[in-house]
Image 1 (cartoon, rainbow, N blue to C red):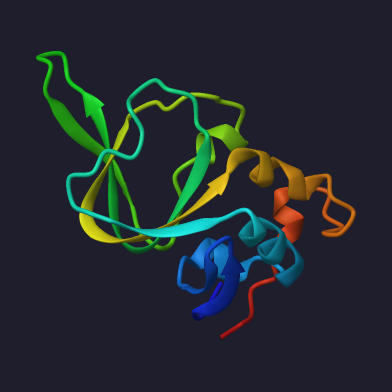
Image 2 (image 1 turned 135 degrees about the vertical axis):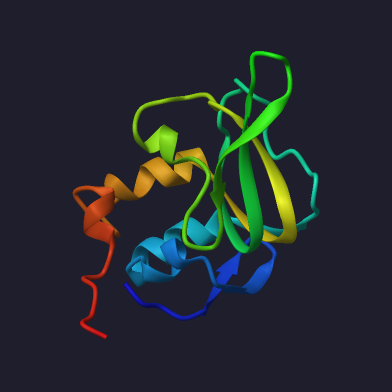
Length: 144
């Protein structure tokens, strides 16, 4: 799926969204989510969630990189995965998990969009979106 940046109006005004997940949502779903969203800068080293805590928001990087850090047996941490603007933190909730599995840490400073989990769950049931599932909210990919 290809999608370029898009303008979206969130709680603090209009922002440019470059996260690829958010940019490929059908407009009705993106508008609904952005009504509840907050976009803010993040700094390298910032911990976005403590390990094993409930998810309150999905986090969509627009710029920068988030590393998912897992605790090793010796008490240190190792990177398990990284998330850039092509993904989001909170997929585990969509798959039924309520708490973080790792410690998400900002590796490269940038900007993220926070969307409350209640809003992430809502579009699948909202008649204004007319979606049966999250999959139904995405546009078919173009052959480009």
